[in-house]
Image (cartoon, rainbow, N blue to C red):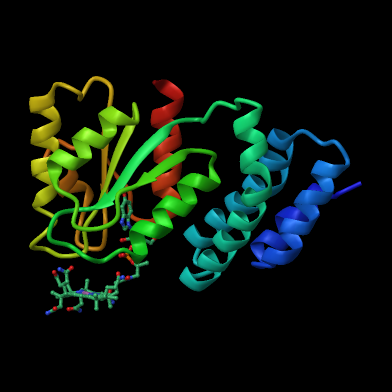
Length: 212
Ligand code: B1M
């Protein structure tokens, strides 16, 4: 019988090939894809998030673990879609207009996926209107904006304003983050939430999705 604890531990070590094989074994043995996802893959990604917050692991380890998560997800995704498993929530994520930094944003996306959220990654240099349009298209609960430049973090205010003007603030929470962004800045532009790192961003996103 495939061991979920083993999948979780191999994922944390970034052993993608073994994670994929054990995930496939669990499927072949008749285990529910949702259970494999939660008890194996998400458990491992959750542990990595906790260790990352405590500075016990760093960016490279998180990236390697995320690659292993994707390897396991490659086996599970078609089965989850087939079974009509509902997502825990949808996040529209991007780096704001004028900003091309994406390493932190990608980490945020991986941590959110590790929590079972659907992440629509819009990439970098994303205009305020595109955030709004995509949030509407995908029925998202969250718009998540990343910025690494003091010059581009101001774009976040334009995203908040565009969401106000579009009348979607009741349905969509706006999260902000990135090296120059602070909680005080988040409050000053009337965004809904600031997170200092990718793991905290994923935790905050889960809270928003659970109450909505
Ligand atoms: Co740029 N760059 N860069 N750069 N770059 C910085 C950010 C800078 C601090 C370097 C410096 O001067 N010391 C500086 C900004 C200064 C400022 O504004 N105060 C800077 C500059 C000036 C520039 C250019 C303008 C340089 C130039 O061309 N003259 C230019 C701008 C280009 C543009 O965007 N338009 C530029 C370009 C680049 C590269 C393309 C070469 C490359 C980006 C490659 C890429 O991303 N694909 C690059 C890089 C790599 C950096 C540094 C070295 C590293 C950034 C990084 O990836 N960090 C950076 C200096 C530094 O930080 N040491 C620097 C690792 C990453 C994991 O951290 O993104 O902070 P970070 O993400 C963290 C948290 O912030 C948080 O979670 C992550 C970790 O858990 N987080 C969120 C991020 N987004 C979040 C969203 C959330 C919540 C949390 O909720 C939604």
